[in-house]
Length: 265
Image 1 (cartoon, rainbow, N blue to C red):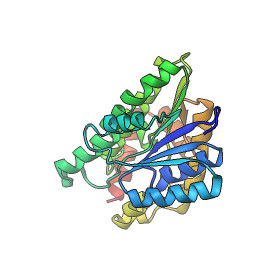
Image 2: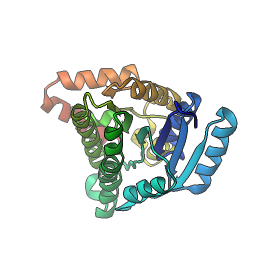
Image 3: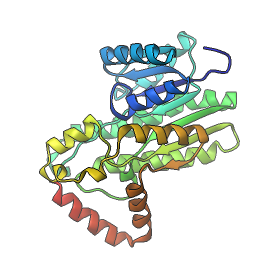
């Protein structure tokens, strides 16, 4: 890595938005630290990124849903003398269905990975950035963060946490040289959404115009992150949805989302 070259850590990098973000950052010359559970997928992606863009890619297989995993990862990087100039918290899980039909373990898995593990990553990696006086953070939230989403009840609540945490932390760090961006995509053409559609007749009926291209989402996320934009919502339909939800009375938003959620079962 050259003196001015940046290194970006991406969690959940083996597929979906995380993989697309890895390609975006590599395309712009960033060396990478890729983190996900699947070592084989990470190694294959690392080889492809290096071959295509000539960047250095370090692979660290880890299950960030396990308590203490963020600290273990941070110490491993310290031992290898690697530091992240950009931190992308993308690891997360989505599960569609009625709240009462999901097990306590399923709810706990969503909460642990989407909120607790993300906060733990920030707690380990942000202080060194603040001490250096430079850094970029991209937290992947969701358009679901802006309103309650029956049928994605726990997931949407965790993404509201990510959005709130990102905005608050960004203000705390204002003037420090470290910025925080919340990426809030809507439905995106990934395996995660494909699994939801496979298990839900209502979800399968969604028009294609509501499904964002993963490369477009990653590009907008990269650009917003490097510009230090606090919140980015990719796609005009998603942006209009957020604006409408903010303008309408809360009770009406709840009723509308409730009707949509029931139709998706």
